[in-house]
Image 1: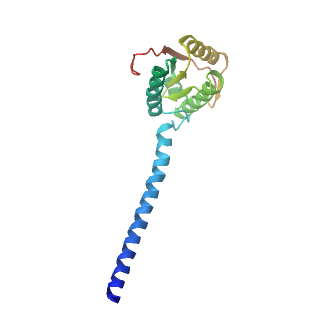
Image 2 (image 1 turned 180 degrees about the vertical axis):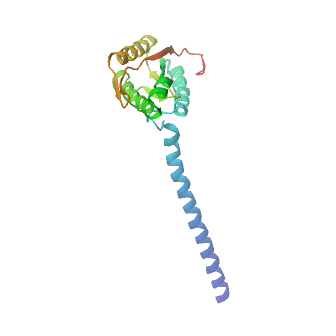
Image 3 (image 1 turned 60 degrees about the vertical axis):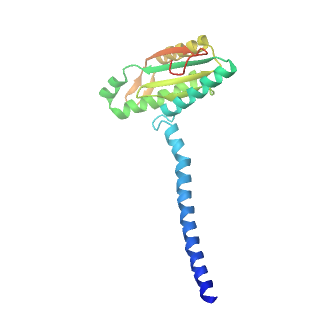
Length: 178
């Protein structure tokens, strides 16, 4: 009986060690799961939403707009001549310009409820939920005009940034890709 009890105790210790190891692995995986969505959801330079986050959000918003029969508009923004700024002043200066520009876009031209993402090097997308085309068009035009009225300070000096923008509104029955 004593031998059997020691054998069971040893087996129990081995199982407890195995469980502790699995718990540690689970903790590491849980931590990775906590930070991975944040990393993939945010553009590291501008801290705006990433392209991946935008793709998820537009699918969800199109579904909601269809179900609730509410408007959904999209503004696509392309920063003009960013490559020229990059070539002239260097990548760090061009990156600083993008950071400052994204801050102005958020603060001055769109609502806190709008979903703003950096979708490429010099491309941004803004989802305006529950807004008609004309409201999105005014916002895009306000951004385009406002940027030309006040220079952005950067290590390259004062820079007037110009953009090109496209505006569209989702129509029920369209896919989000359309």
